[in-house]
Picture (cartoon, helix red, strand yellow):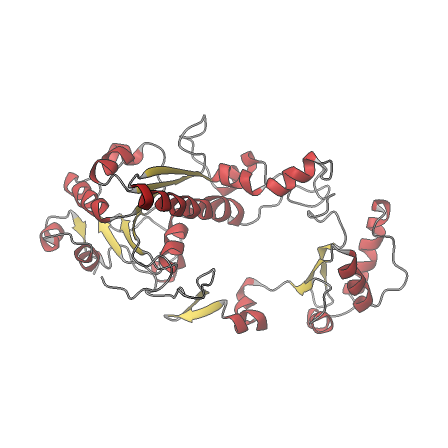
Length: 382
């Protein structure tokens, strides 16, 4: 399957052994940046919740359905490995080894291959073979406990913090760093991207503040966890919300000026934080979100409307930057980040598992694909 590509990763070939969540997101990101990614799906798909034609995580690359229970299918994937720069997989530790597609087998066919592994707990450790999800990984990493309001329970930040920030982004960073080494030396290696490790790494700033005595272990009492009234969200008269991030004094002065508050409790006195929060809450509740947005627009108060996800594509800033685009009848986030010389572009829409088996395998140089389909080694979806 020939897909016209731009982007800084043009010419990089990636095999994605399809899993769920962070693995597909990493595959999407690599494809967005111009890599030639081939998805190795199981016949019939992986039982995803999102309909395949709307699953943005599968965009930008073809899908080949391969029956990995057939030894001949393992040979097909190893033939692909000979032509690849990177392989990514998200199975439990030991699964690809049992299939015959572990790092040792792959490096025997391609010594320069970068073998990227994404799991929740990592390839070793007492929890390595235990099932889990984002909420579990960020819990153990120490990131969930600080999130939430004082007196309340920890609040789950969707599955952005663990799966995608601590997982996918670290996998992509790792495989690209290892690819630089492989191209310089001819030596491939294994990248062990554990969501717990990546999430802990993301806590560097908070851990620094804690070490310096600037971060309390009491949830919701700190500068960035809704403890400070000038870093919080406030409800407006129409039931919507405004976000306030006026940390620096000069920005705070603009905030108070636009709000028109005259008798203001001292923001530097923690003992007056509850009183200050009450004043801010009462003031924001006096106007609609649209009214406050108009008043704060263009100021340095660090105030912005809390835009619902289904409305974000229409926000003027996002429209101006084309942060969201409509592609193949689906509104979706545009590739990020942006490049001045090698712009990334969206290519194919999400693909059903096995929709491109014949084309994709032939494009990677696999011979006699028709025979493989006839024998059930690989499957071409209708």
